[in-house]
Image (cartoon, rainbow, N blue to C red; front, side, top):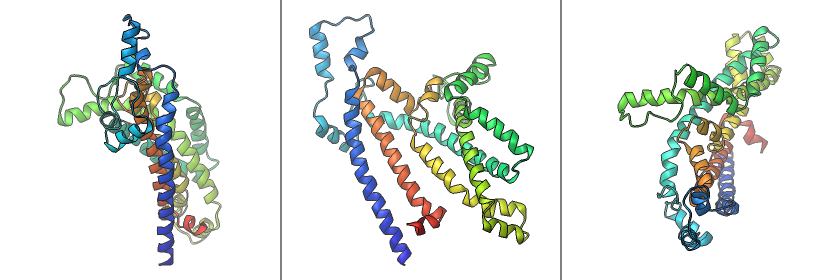
Length: 326
């Protein structure tokens, strides 16, 4: 019961701390975008052939001027609309909810696949330390980790979309195709292949190197040597004893990368014109759509807070030693 009470007290402390941090992030998400140069009027008409008179320009700026200040911003949040987008003429919350599933599909799939493959290959490489299997993988991972996402994305786009034409070059589904059911799912999966592969190749080396490094240390631990001395099968030693203890750093990395849901996919989403939150944020910045910028920044910040809170709580189930260390 004492341990259970300690757990509950710790979780309550985390919730209070993250709640206060969220209040700070709400203010910063409102305040920081205000320092962006230019405004919606200059973004709309600054480079176009339309020339506004001084009176028209003044009226346009007055129409899209910020009203209500921080109190009005809080009222918009409380109304669940999160403000009204200047460029898209729609509630910010609706625009975020429309883009969110595409980003979750892309980023979530990429994180899960790269974590799974990185963990398994990292464990196997550490078990075969010094052999050709590990050396080849380390060389390959060093090359992949040195390639920026933009280089990998453009290369895959050029070869497989433009040159070979095996996959679509842009979008999440074929426009105006009116597909339904399995046809729509297959079409979406076909569009997903290139951006997903780009992200997996970007995330995979870090997961592999982290899993391998953790396993190398754990395989030297006394409990692993004891398992060997008992004559347990190598597969059981590798996964039931050693790999489980190497999982915590990988879970941490998974959570932190998943928390950066928007910023982590901005480059790839824009290379492939994928309709996710990253593309939405860049469009909002380009148009100086202040309410939309504030909404996406706030959503991204709260996502980071939530994922970190869940990570702090989940550590106690993954590795009980974290609890005792406190």
